[in-house]
Image 1 (spheres, protein in one colour):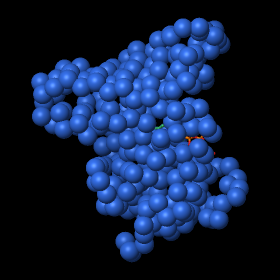
Image 2 (cartoon, helix red, strand yellow; image 1 turned 90 degrees about the vertical axis):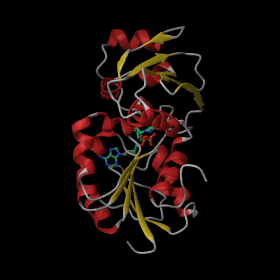
Image 3 (tube, protein in one colour; image 1 turned 120 degrees about the vertical axis):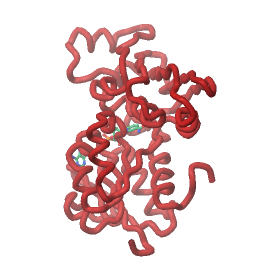
Length: 263
Ligand SMILES: NC(=O)c1ccc[n+]([C@@H]2O[C@H](COP(=O)([O-])OP(=O)(O)OC[C@H]3O[C@@H](n4cnc5c(N)ncnc54)[C@H](O)[C@@H]3O)[C@@H](O)[C@H]2O)c1
């Protein structure tokens, strides 16, 4: 790798646009943004829009900000070509066979902490001993939890609820499959504790939820942990929290050795 790291952003939406603009403004010294990949037309960018094959050719690192499907379809090509990959759509890694395949490829892969925190502590505690219980309760505006596979009746019930309504209760793998854009946090927690079967997930639709709230509770032999995280939504995409592009940039910084988890 040359001293300048050439980066490409896949997905120029609410996360990708902020990531791209921050990189162009010099957020990470020595990182040059050279490609933007999007299925839509990328307007008002000084960086060339390319297809993914070209981006793999000219970039050292690709930053996925496009959705789970892009990770499923393209992560192997990126990592197989020896390029590094920062992943926003962490839920794509809920499938253990998929992540095992990706880990065997030459490129390095790092998921962003995204909308959640405390993963370092949970990881350290789970290295010491398996947690007894881990739960993630995510409370969002009802429209953010409606999914295409839901019946019209169920969608209407969620959208029209006047009080907090539990939409699902189950494991992290199933949760990230059923709510691909909304429960990346659940997979992030299950990756942190290295135990996808342990993490129980409860998305709650709440019409009064001006902020998206994640309550992570873990109990085990070395301690009990409870984090409440409240994020403002992105002004461009209410399903995404405004913090996420900044978490993505930090993850890129960690991958490139610019900074550690702290400092
Ligand atoms: N880790 C987290 O905490 C967290 C939080 C929020 C969102 N996310 C993930 O980030 C993803 C992006 O979020 P966003 O708010 O920026 O979404 P967005 O809809 O605002 O932007 C997504 C962009 O990706 C593009 N895109 C879609 N399919 C593509 C493809 N095959 N190739 C190239 N570009 C493609 C779209 O055209 C769009 O411009 C979400 O789908 C979600 O999976 C993760």
